[in-house]
Amino acid sequence: MITIYGMTNSGNCYKPRLLLAKLGVPFRHVETSSGADGTTSALFLAKNPNGRVPLLEFDDGRVLAESNAMLLHLAEGTRFLPADAYNRALAYQWLFFEQYSHEPYIAVRRALLTMPHRAADATPERLAATLAGGKKALQVMEEQLARTAFLAGAELSVADIALYAYTHDAEAGGFDLSAWPAVTAWLARVAADPGHVPIRWVG
Image (cartoon, rainbow, N blue to C red; front, side):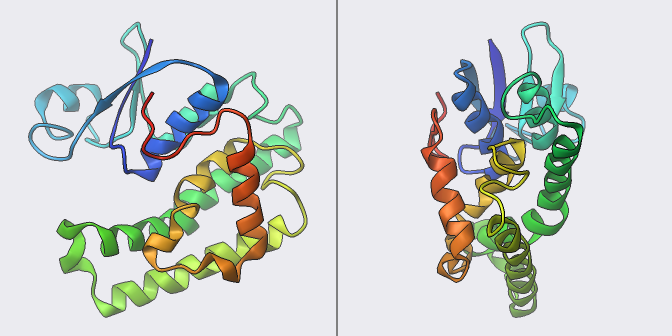
């Protein structure tokens, strides 16, 4: 059985759990904190020298880090990875967008506002910058989702799984999603797709 080392409230850790749930693939979740007993322990660093979760471990001991790499691997040969080469490239495009133009603002602002250990970093300047960056990312998504049902076209893909993870909880970071109606409607479509589970579900 696949093992996922992760944190239940992390959007990045939610991504592979959500995809596996939609695929109906069982897995084992190991709650892994940051710190000496978790991601910086010698045991964990032997598996992932980068000291981050999520981390996916296979029965044969192979491991795979980086949430979007996990999505691509787990989606191979399924409906979540487009067969058409161009549409597949569009899905990749949104995965890169998520990591470089979305997560650094929407996920980070959520962390600054909701995690006590990040409070010292929540300066007015940092909050303003993450708010502006997040709004820009949501507007890019809004314009695409006003044209297509899902980010890479007519069908749900890994692109939607990746961007759903932090977007669906963006209001915790101070983003009023009513300003982006196409994004709001898309969130409902992703949640209505078979096998959907909430972020704190771990199997």
